[in-house]
Amino acid sequence: MELYTLLRQFADSWMLLFLFTFFIGVIVWAFRPGSTKAYQDTANIPFRHDDAPAPSQGQPAANKEARA
Image (tube, rainbow, N blue to C red; front, side):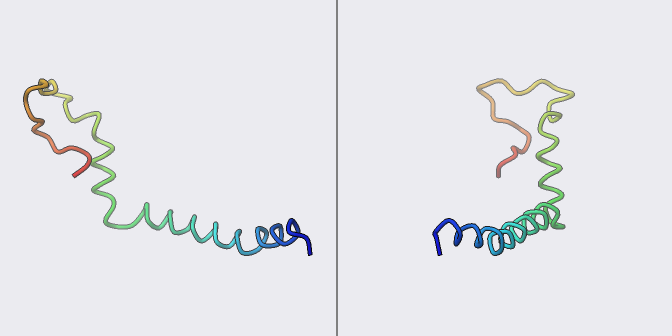
């Protein structure tokens, strides 16, 4: 059996199953119950200083940053 044929059969069967399982795992990870707060906090980054200007360079930021 040629190497190409062997790799083609592997890609058509087991690699397809592996990539599908990986895809489902990423979807489950993204929509897990504990991730909602983290995603909402990250989504609101552009609106943190909507009412007041951002602090100047010498002052520490009063709001929580995206990365803890």
